[in-house]
Length: 83
Image (cartoon, rainbow, N blue to C red; front, side, top):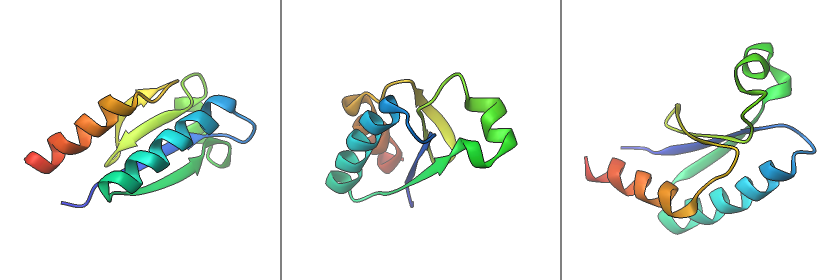
């Protein structure tokens, strides 16, 4: 199963910078793909996520918001791999 982590954020968001660093590290260590989406480029994303960014999705399902817990992210990836 392919696993993709998506970071939803916006320019100038310091929490997004922190989340990006964690996601980059976890993705590199676990060999999963990750992508970033700027919520300001989509009215729907802005409406849905403005108050929660950064938001972390795993395979399109919301996993975390505001802060990324590295251990929790790793555990979620391992759980998906175990299925």
